[in-house]
Length: 432
Image 1 (cartoon, rainbow, N blue to C red):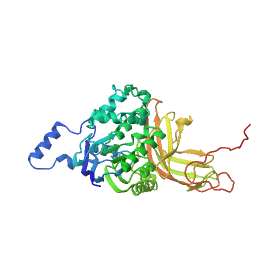
Image 2 (tube, rainbow, N blue to C red):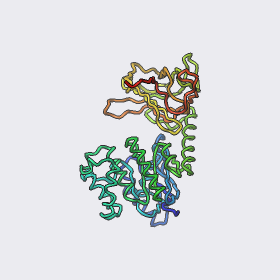
Image 3 (cartoon, rainbow, N blue to C red):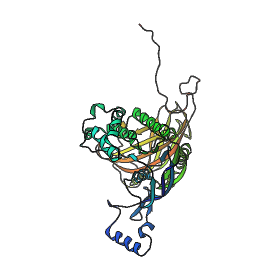
Image 4 (cartoon, one colour):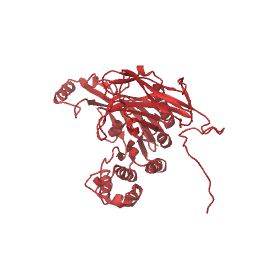
């Protein structure tokens, strides 16, 4: 099959602190450079897209020198951390925004699902928006009518299809938007991680539809997701972005493995040497480790045993102890979030914060099954349930946790790998 999409030297530059990326002065300087045959002076400046670093210039490159080709029928997965440039790339491919440099060459119609409600008019009904989106794609009313019933059924919004979209929940908007984008026969379907808003059943249904579009109909799909299992299952090829640059391209399995390997590699770097922290740094975690009930540090854990997870910290500036919130998240080897411990959910309040100390999370019985996990944390001041957290110290993939195969139930049978061991009892009853 031939090439349906080609990105050549795609870069996107933004000016920090303003809505637009340009000023009259800068536009005039650009014009002078152009008529004098000189390069754009502002393309030679700009910081790398690293959100954890302090800004040193007014310009930042959200994307830099991206090159790739996509063939007809390919399903391309674009993966990377938050802020890597994935959504910016999709917006450029969808022609929502223009690249600062470079060119996108495409064949055929492009349908995109980038954000909740994208392309929908809130005052129009769901049915009217189906026709509106079809018209934008260049379809005739007759072509849309042939697909209308199928779209409505797939979305599961039959009851509300003649209700204005502004009355829809975010999940309903996503279901209808995906149904419209997938069924109006685009040559290229662009899907951002907006599918995470939908329920699990619809996510499976949507992935199945994308597989049908690519394998059965020979259409092309560009897919962004943090769900590595979905990327492996759906995609044929993958690109890994980091700080706005493409750092790896290969098969979907190879790209996911490369991304996960880098995530685990980052967690092996001592915390003191990590440069990707976020927050105001009033308090900083200096060490993370597990210890057994005897107080000995351990690096390998067994399901069913008791442990303490310690976060040693140093206080740099005063923190309101009553507002202090600690959130710890665990992700598996597929980078899927599997567990969260949060002090605000537990109703925990701290009475005093010391200059040096540690947060100790007591785990009476570890319920993780065998596998490798990464640990991320966020320490913040939470003003109220209706306001956002003021981040103090936030670090992704701060440490690793290795759980070994073990006899959780003390029956002589080792528990199976992956997931959790659920505490439960099982009985059998005779029908009355």
